[in-house]
Length: 405
Image 1 (tube, rainbow, N blue to C red):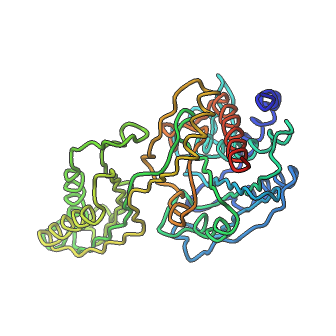
Image 2: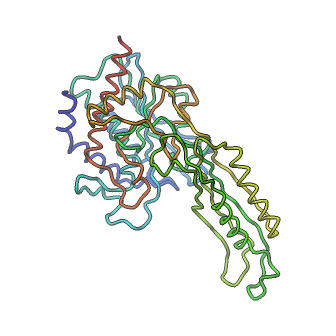
């Protein structure tokens, strides 16, 4: 197909644009360089013929960080088949342990390294160039309208966020389909995600001198007991669903942060910790929540501490049942990758919950691999990036042709 030739001819341009995006550290929290990357993306869309607008996300929904939360929307074409794409430009903090500069966009051994290479600046590049490559190959159907959306604050989640949640009316008014390009691997189709609960637990004790800690109420000790029991509470069950990666077939809990104490020789009267509890589809979110609270109450009674449970994100398993998009992607993946694609749920959550809840046909397909997302030396294979552009181009053609037949 002419599309594939154009993609291969444009390889250097595509890879260089990915490197350009990686070189803008959009770490969230706190939300760095959002305006800068939106300006770069806006210039690219306008260069490619889009009309653009920026919709500011509601700062009321920003729990971590501060500053502007710009959502970029680009429109191309006036057809009656309305296809939207969604990509988030924020990335998690790079952290330590890298063998390369996480914000240099190093290319070697057929890979591009950097924070966001997999999750999900390669997805952003794929969705832009899938459309542009069709244009250059003179294959973009006249009956389509393309809506490109680039959003912040996916990484800090929330029942509402300043990104995709604030674009719900855009999708409802302009899109028949929404295609997300999150990393679930170029041989997989993702139609949803597991459930999750995110919470901050604040524990209050009583200060005393370290020489006679018995006179205090030790918040650190209470938190240690809480954490131990929470980890021990995870049931040893395996989901019957296809979940990517395979480890996601089991429920899990993560205490990602612990902040305690003011001095080595003082009993801590305050300690807080975070909880991320991942649910498999067979679990019920209300039962999981009650299990967490029961442990916290028991330890509170035993130790004399008080606690506050701040649950700022709770979502059940989300599944799209749309077969049209799934079958179209399977056909393209078979043609380009030579494999029979499987349909999976993501072990993590992502913004597809906001479009599925609005009844919009939604699916996820992107070049990144979730196993390296958020890791040190995060990368994307150049071949995966190019192949995903070819597959997404075929998806656009398939939807347009089916709608006109």
